[in-house]
Image (cartoon, rainbow, N blue to C red; front, top):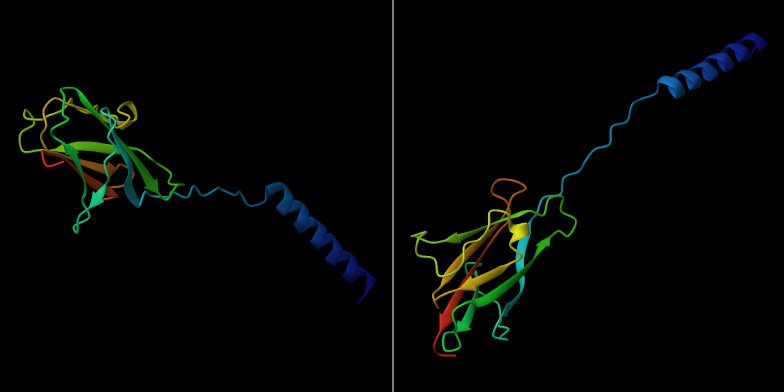
Length: 154
């Protein structure tokens, strides 16, 4: 190659490096959203010292059976749960009491924001209660239902 060709190639190369370095491509970081796929109850504790087992029915509903004989007004039931995957972007949950009559709930109402609730239910009478936990990160996302029942045969 001639000396002039090498010099022109060198100038074009350095010029392109300089132009790309100054103006370059603007990189925009992509915020990957990881949706909640599963909600599972990890433990249930009761203010009377009982730690009942969490069982699962064939339809996927979790349930807990508490002793009706040990019931006292103001019985506190604490529910702990975990979400999967652990690195999900939004961990907010919606918890609703599933009932036919909203005026006929056997426990204190649950606040709108679960972060203020901390999973404690205060029962005033020994009746069954069904709770639905739902992820708020997308519609029709992860859900979990747990049924708390009282039995006198314990």
